[in-house]
Image (cartoon, rainbow, N blue to C red; front, top):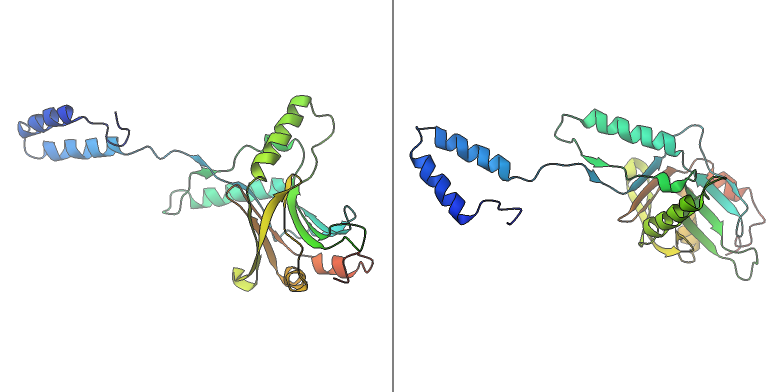
Length: 236
């Protein structure tokens, strides 16, 4: 039976015959009931992995010494999840109510989403500016089952290409830069000086794919990068 048209031709014919013998008004009530019963149920659906941390006064970009050095931002996922839940509650009962829910994030096993911006290599001859979107390593003492879940989660959530979007005042879009899967994360290709300056000057940075939606502010990003004159890609 077709899930969108659950009534067969025979059953519809029988129902129509019964409606003709009903009192005036009863048939229209039955039609309403049948129409409502035929509609698919509005069930909760799973949206992308969301992490939004753009206005926190206590969370900001810090120096990063991995790869070739730069700056990193680790999202306050607990705060982000709480804000997301509060926003859904605020919209409940309105025309903007949503049943989209955050997917299970147990696979993180103590890790969390992060942005990294800086140099790709310590060797100045090989180094270039790049932006990376990923997650921190899992916590200590995890089981082999947890490790497998973490690896599978990383492959899924960071296995689809996307876009780095730089936002200005009033969330006006400034620039888009492609992101591609690389080394269990999403990375840009080598960034131009125009790209670098756009990132440093953007109030908000967003990374989006069909599977993730990460968004951060840029508090202390410019100061952190400018304060490190020894970055191997600084001259590029």
